[in-house]
Structure formats: structure tokens, C-alpha cells
Amino acid sequence: MLFIWFAHVFCLEFATAFTHFAQMKRRSTILVSVVFATVLTSNLPVRADEAGEERYRRCVDMIDRSPDKSINLALEWQASGGGVPARHCEALGLVELGEYAEAAARLMRIAEDIRVGRGMPVLGDQRLVANATLIADMYGQAANAWLLADEIVRAEDAVELALSVVPAGTPQHRELLVDRARIAAADNDFEYALQDLEAVLASDQNRTDILVLVAAAARSLGQYNRAEDALTRYRKTYPDHTAGLLELGNLRHAQGRRDDARKAWLDLLRFSVEGEDADAARANLAKLDMHIATSEDSKN
Image (cartoon, rainbow, N blue to C red; front, side, top):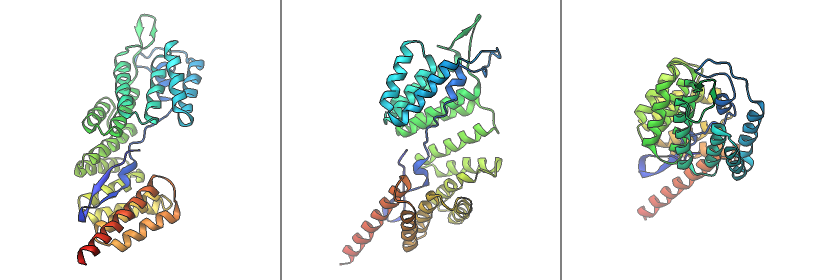
């Protein structure tokens, strides 16, 4: 979703594996759990509102097909008391429409509201408050939306808020560290990004999916051996993933092996002509050809 470009030798820039990292997580259980389910810090039993849960799922499921319609459904639902789930569906619809900053601001307000119980249902004499898992998830979504809006400082603030409420060592904490690494990469702080990614791998060696990000960060720091090792492991685990070929081309170019870089990007396009990785490969090839043409002209 987010288009990040990293500088390389010859002042060329190439799309990398970090390009696609800000992925909004539309898990339809996130906000359902806040209002309709029983996982609340009050520890009071709450019967799930099945009609509201289904309405939320329908609203979220509509986003891919028609984000405008999903937003209208969310607004109608808010007018009839839909509360936090309706607001969340609206925010995700705004993300799909590319209104990232507006979506991020709304997601932040939702996170702050569910943290203190503002706008939440009242059970007896106690207002319900979301648990740490849900609060952190909402701050994490806000961080990704801020990143999509190119608001790096706000993204950093949001992900730190998320990390401050979730227990360390949990899968959610590790996922937020990956988010923080991606935000750091967007700020060209690849050392910090690599540090977080390595911490995740140390905690969970099965997170081979992030090895392509490790390779990209290590390459950007000039640590080509580390990048090569991570990328080899990634491609062995995910031989059909185009992200591996994209990063292979980036690494080969950084090593001065332009022909090998071209081959990797062309291999990617032979494997898949559609999608963000294919678009990035075409952009990289165009930039490479432009540089070669410019170099030849300067010689003549």
C-alpha cells in the first residue's frame, strides 16, 4: 500500500520489499470483540449481540467491493447507535479510498475512546473498557494509516502507544515490532528497523516471512552478507513469492551486478505481470535503463 523508495548507488532509487509493508488489517473480529463479545477488562459476562456482529461483518466485507457504500452503511449505523464498530468500519472504508490521514485520526480517536470506555456500552453501573489486546490493535492500525499518509512522526507515536499496552513477548508484540521496523525504514533508519526485525526473529525463529525485510534493511546498511543470508532463507521458504525476486534484484544492483539485477526483475515479470511487485520491477527496470542510456550519452 505504501510506496517507499530507497536510494542506491548512481543516485538511482529502487522499489523494495518494504514497499508493501503498511497493510491495514481488516479482521472483522477486532471491533466486534470490543462491543459485542466478552473479552473486556471488566471481566463481566456480556452476551454477544449477534445482529450487531453480523452488521459489522457485512459493513467490513463491503469495503473491497464498494468503499463508498460501506462508509454510507457505517454512517447510517452510527446514526442509529452503531457506536465503535460502525466508526471502525467507516475508518477502514476511508483507508480503502486513500483518505489515509482522516482514517488515521479516526482510528486514533477510537483507540483512545475504547481505552477509557468513552462511548462504550454501560453494564449495570460500570462502563465497559476494551482490553489491552484490542487497544494495541487499534493503535497499530492507526500507525499503519499514518504511515500510508506519510506522517512518519505520528506513525511512530501510534506504534509506541500500541507497544506500551501490549505484553512483551506475545505474538501481537512481535507484530507491532515489525510495524515499528517498517516505520523506521520509511524514515530511512534501517539500523533501527533491522534491530526490531532481529528481535522478532530471536523471539520467534518461525517468522521467516520477515526475512525479506531483514534482507532489505541489511542491504540498505551495506551489510550484503547478512542480506544475502536472509534472502536465501526467505526464497528457500517462499520460492514462489515475487517479493524475493524483487529484493534479489535490489541486492544484486547494490552489489554492482546490474545484469543479475535485470535478470531477477525480468524473472519476476515472467512469473507475474500484475501486482505491486510486478509494478516495482518494471519501475526498477525503467530506472536502470534510463541510467544506462544516460551513461552512454555522457560517453558520446
